[in-house]
Image (cartoon, rainbow, N blue to C red; front, side):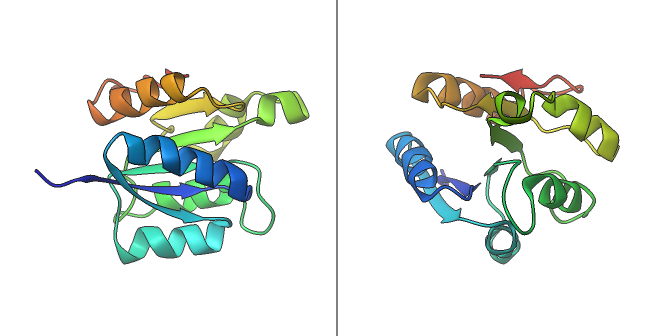
Length: 139
């Protein structure tokens, strides 16, 4: 069986390292990027089994990259989990932002600070297909 692969995109290097460690401990091969442009390049070079994407980043934001990935036939079906602290940072509901894009919703959502068990519950649920029919898994 092929190993699961993930691309983590977050502008906080400490967080990408932390998330990478969690996924690697759960048999994932992981590639990381600290900005949206580099993350998109990793995804297009070798599409992963899963994408973890921060919403709030400088330059190409997670929201912009999310819309671009969901609008592209080559990437729109890759399971994607939003990893963010946007609700606490801006007091804005992330679902409102995503709904305004009129794109297929993310498959999962995990709020910072990240709890490893909660993250893996969402990751495993997303990869098992539990997030079908518009249901978003929260962690």
